[in-house]
Length: 198
Image (cartoon, rainbow, N blue to C red):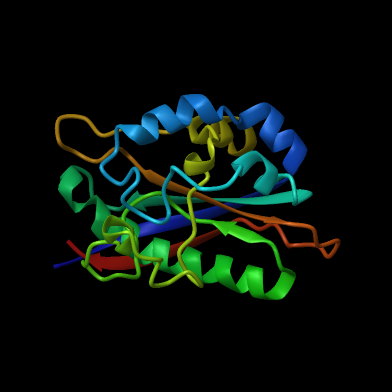
């Protein structure tokens, strides 16, 4: 049965140095990552075999995107969350990869299960290289960024959690693009109505 949801997209620009100094606490957030089954089992997740701070500092600017997903109906079970999130992840990750092609730089996608192995286990579990290195991108959380603070301080959005097995009033995906381009990456806010099978 088709159900609707509305998306609102917000963007913010901040220097990488400021974003690191105000919003990054790698030790704290990697400890949270260690509690996730994807830790060490997905190429988009820590631990990484390089210095993440040094990697980030090769870029000057961070273009951040918050995608707010508001279900039209209330009382949706939490186990349906991916049916709302997945189409928006696909859309946003395509946009991020286009930014990489246009401006250079590096995208940071939404945390969660990889979109590209279609149900198969990540090659990392078998000590093999990523099958989709041109597409798989880590999340900002995987590099130690505080997403709740990012949302509240840069976007004025509170991160909500589900209760009693029911989704909150809205979900938010946070992603980003780190770059050195002096060309303006246009910030925008827009609202779209979408439908999905629930």
